[in-house]
Length: 596
Image (cartoon, helix red, strand yellow):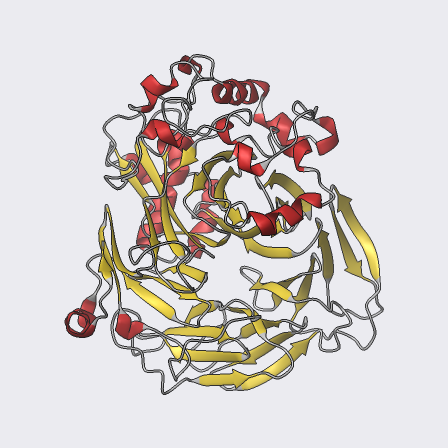
């Protein structure tokens, strides 16, 4: 990827970065790729994706990694921060003809040292069930492409099930399969089960049970990704029409929706306790949505192009307690979620998170950590702090978990986004329409670029937030688009005006998407899609260029985080203090990367 108008400084790849926890280091010896280590020519290929599974073998090294590069699929022992990767001995390698792998998912319930169940979705629409340890191919679903002919965008096992899995397609359809059932030799006939706003669910009509069990039609355009909530009861879907839709999976009912600021949404993830959803996409933003309140509570701007992956870091999400006795109990509703975490730290964190929201006092200080990677080759890390989560409560001045920015970052006031009628991004002018904002912004955490309370002097953002709260969030959650009165219909939504300081590098591609059936002007300024000045704008803790090609993977593990780019290189970044055996090797032979 050539540097665009930038000098050497702009194009340097970072090999380590520092957060409040310490230094994260790239382990060059733990890089996974095709055995020849040659960069993959990614033109026209599907994104590189990575899946992990632990097979609980006796050696203590039970982690396994699967990744696709072009037409190839690899399955290796993953040695992480402990030992160097040995690419000469893949456990399994497959090369496909006429179609490419697009996504994959392990069944963690059934995995053993002798057998794993891996689902693989393909660009022509098929889904394959394979066992890379036994080197078997047990079944092929949608083999004749009678169910759906479009590319598989996401495939996941249904949480807690050994046989059910869900598949989404570029057609905008999702299908529920059972591995025990066949797909039939003719195209399926469907019967309507449930219908709602911009979605419908059909059952398969046949004499004997066959796949698919259910067909979901969601939104307009491709369904780009979906994610199950930690308790497995809810399903979050993001689509090319720019909507996040959250469903009660078992009841097949719509729980809530959110609209992107611009363009399609590409990725989605849940917080460890299931209370927040983060989505990213073609508006270059990460958007934080409250599951309980069904509304946008923050947006994050750090990427210069489309955001391809968002993920919460379960191991850095932290809870500080004022009273050590505070986490002795938790809400019973959350007890059944505990099995999904498997680590004591995650368990205690979630227990305390549920306790935190069940009281009106401030017994604990909460910080959620999440990350994002994008087509701009950058990794961003974000902290979601309590001043964003609980804006009605007095701000804690003693908390140490506010965002840590570089010394060269602009003052907090300069991050405020102005009205659509103003193009200025200067810190002195940006608060012109919100009296008292500049005097307040210096005392607020940098993650909070807009004051929340009415004491801000009647600012536009606070007025809308307060009226929404006063009216009651539950009312908004049940409103349909047609019930909402459009307040700004006389103004055309122009991206470069309302987001003046945000790079419009990808605006040419994005302009094509404004002609979709859903008129952005009808959602902008509503609860579905608040204006930029109506919600806090997060700044990233770190924002580093870590690859030459667009990034397609971000996974947080206990002792490292894993990223991958479209060239087919899967990189392991050791968490602070977790470098292990590779530290001496790295010091001796690491490339001349930039230390930041």
